[in-house]
Each structure stands twice: as structure tokens, then as C-alpha cells.
Length: 394
Ligand code: GLA
Image (cartoon, rainbow, N blue to C red; front, side, top):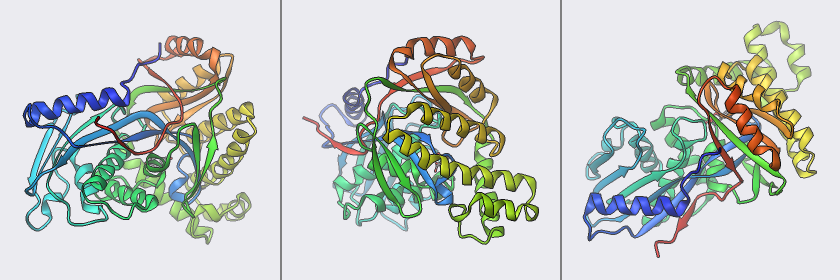
């Protein structure tokens, strides 16, 4: 059966309990916030090519509770059991700012990165506890949800101008400088701007987002975690980005967003085979994403599912970011009656697949995928959820 994940209020209770345990039974947080992880329905590796993406925010979230202190001491504690590093990080903000340089523990780099790029000064000292239901390294943007949750927390201590796009961009910067991944804008953007009952069509060039209703009781969005993470992720992502930039420059374009398949075919002999295939994936995937958004609007789920499978095949064969486990999960899902489409989601080389299917088929699909998959999968039955928000502690 599908995994039961803690609700937001269960995570808040857990974080409050940990807060009192860490800081004393008499001590209580004054602020609580959360920000979601995301699943991308289609539009993979298009965001850093200025293309379109179609993600939705998840009910899996990172919660931060805490409050300001009267000195410049910063103490942050995480509840994560996945980290085999110290779960507590402390420093004093007095000094030259070097306390915010990346270091150990690794999870704290996201916190430091967000503090570094936060858009209002000065920040007071504070205590905070993090509790998350987003699986780490599962391709559901656990790091973006932590960055955006932390940014939202800092907004309660010393408000910035409240501009949401600037907030997402600051969190993306934190990922670049402190998370070591030159990511696009998708994850942070949807974690800030996601809406319950909607997917978000993001134009990654203009940064304009359009809400796409996705609230059909007949439909389920099933996420399957392969529970594998191949070490390639770190080095392959920047390589893909470079290959895309190189292709755009050979085509004489600012980005692959501006290129058509005709442009690519005309210059085919100027590109090596690998670069050609990378560019072809991106150009076609951008097109697929706008088609998928139209299909969703008219509830043409079969058409949407077909585009999902084409996206997966292209990520596997042209962009080469899938892996045996993800291919197995997609193949197994597609064997089930009532499944519209399935694909890998996120950066690739492990992590999750996303499957769109008829609601009554979900139990059968889970059983079948479990039976066919060579590893041990985890399932999440999800629906589009709200972006980052302040929570009540009452
Ligand atoms: C990661 C990055 C995103 C995006 C996806 C691939 O999740 O953080 O910006 O590039 O990979 O679509």
C-alpha cells in the first residue's frame, strides 16, 4: 500500500517536542512555517534552458519552528534520521560573515545559504528546529523545500518586501552557492508559488506562472520512489547544462528556448552526436510541456499520459539521465489498465517516477509495480498542495 506520511500538524508537533527537548521544557517556539517538496509532471531539464515546466507542490513538506533570541547566537536542529552528521549547528553571527561559508554538517549549508542570500538585514539571532517529510535525495526537492521553508522563517523574524519571485530566486542562489548544484528555478519557484488543487505552468524565461487546475476526483498522481540514488547526479547535471549552452551557441541562440527542430537539423553537422541529442530532447520537451498543459486544461488525460511517456523515453535515450530502476518502474506502471502515463521526475539517475492514473486503479497499480520492480519501492498518493506558508502555533 501507499506510504502514510506525517501531516503538517504532526510535523509541527514533532518539531515543538524537539524544540523543548533541545532548549528546555520552559522554552517554546513563537513562529512556525512550512514549504513543500514538488513533483514535476512534465518539462524535465528545460528550466535552465529558459523553457516551460509543469510541476505541482506536494503534501510532503519541511516545517521550521523557532523564534528570535536577544543575542546573535544561531542554533538550528534537524530531526532528520537520514543524516549521519551532527543534527545541531550553532554559530555566532557577530564577525565577518565567514560563519555562513559552506562546511559541515552538509544539511546546514542550505540554512547558511538562505541566510547569506536573505533580502533584508539585519537578522537577529534565533533558534530553530527543522522537521521534514520530504525524502532526502529522492528527487522531490527536499533541499528546495528546506531553503524555502527557512526563507519563510526568516521573513517572520525580519520581513523583506514579500516579493515571491525574488524569494524563489534567492533560494535558488542558496542552492548554487551552498548546495553546490547549478539548478534551474523550477523547484524553489513551485515551493514558493504552488497552489492547492493546481499544477503550475512556469515560463522559466519570463518567470510568469500560470495555475492549471488539477483537482479531478477520478484522477490520482502516484509517486514511486525507486529508493536508489546513483552517484552520477553530482557531476552529470552541470555537464548537461554545459552541453545545452554549447548547442545554443552553435545555433546562434541565447538559449535552446529560442531554437526550433529546424534550426537544429540545419546545424546538425556542426554538432557532435551527444550535443545534438541533448538539444533535441530540450527542444522537443519544451514543446511537449505546452502541449501537456493544454491537454490538462481539456482533461485529455490520455494525451497527457502519452506525452509523459514520450518525455520519459527522451530522457532515457536522448538526454541519458534515467537509469535501469526508473525504466523498470515506468514499464511496470504502463502495464496496468487505468494508467494514463508514467515518467521519471526530477534530475534523474534515481529518485522517483510520477504516474497519472484513474483513481480506482491505484491499488492494483501499486501491487503490480511492487511485484515487477527488482528493488524496494515506496509509494506516495499525492494531490497538488499549497506553497510555502506561515502556520498557527495555537
Ligand atoms: C533538478 C533541478 C531543477 C531541474 C530538474 C530537471 O531538480 O533542481 O532545477 O533542472 O533537476 O528538470
